[in-house]
Image (cartoon, rainbow, N blue to C red):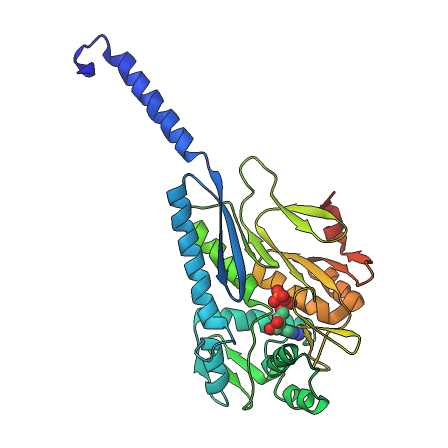
Length: 332
Ligand code: ADP
Ligand code: MG
């Protein structure tokens, strides 16, 4: 045996220890892994730094499983989701709900109050009407819009933190978390990764990004932004973009966005692209939707009052408006 001669022992021991260290050192230098899965009606992409492929696989599985759970709870495309059940069962009586759903409703209410209802999670009757309109390629009848509007309004949704319950004022109400759920799912996926020891990751739920620590040896995650052409270098935060680019209805020379103005019940026609940064995805996602509704002037004024937000708004004709700190972050 190699160890039997005392004279050799220290040398051999040293070699072994060195080999072990290099072996370990090599295995633990985090490498970038990426995985894409379909969830929440879109493709979700996760990038993360892990010591090896097996660790990355475990992390991806846990993060995507968490997203799948949130999708099942929060979707309004399924009657069986907790959100849809709440819309049916909480009329005039408090219904106890999951912590996930409660957090989404609570964050929604906060941003509704801050934006005078520009963001409104109770727009389900309208969003469903416009979804059907996109399918049939026909703008909804004004009477149908008026009827749907009458079943909307964030003040008609009541939350009780102590009992973790929600209550709806009238029948026909329908919640739609489409403007906030993807950002929340990105946050929660990151939280799962963090608990598994993955401290540098980026979760992209189409336009809703959330990310943890900077990639090893860098100043942050490079987030491409539409206009002006450039990127942000950020860590431990979120960036969300809302726009009519993907889902819209073209009719009568107008382009109606899938984002609805709660005052009129109509899809937005301003054609803004709004990028928002925040500490958390749940906030960035809802804020980008809200600013789209508020428009350039009111939207930027609101952002400048929020210490946790920065925004870039691009108008249809290419004019851009950046909030004070957003400007400083743009790298060419
Ligand atoms: P995307 O889903 O393309 O990322 P948003 O985050 O802006 O875009 O969310 C748009 C979705 O939010 C719509 O498809 C609809 O489900 C819902 N929604 C539409 N208008 C509003 C609104 N004013 N407030 C809250 N949610 C809205
Ligand atoms: Mg949004």
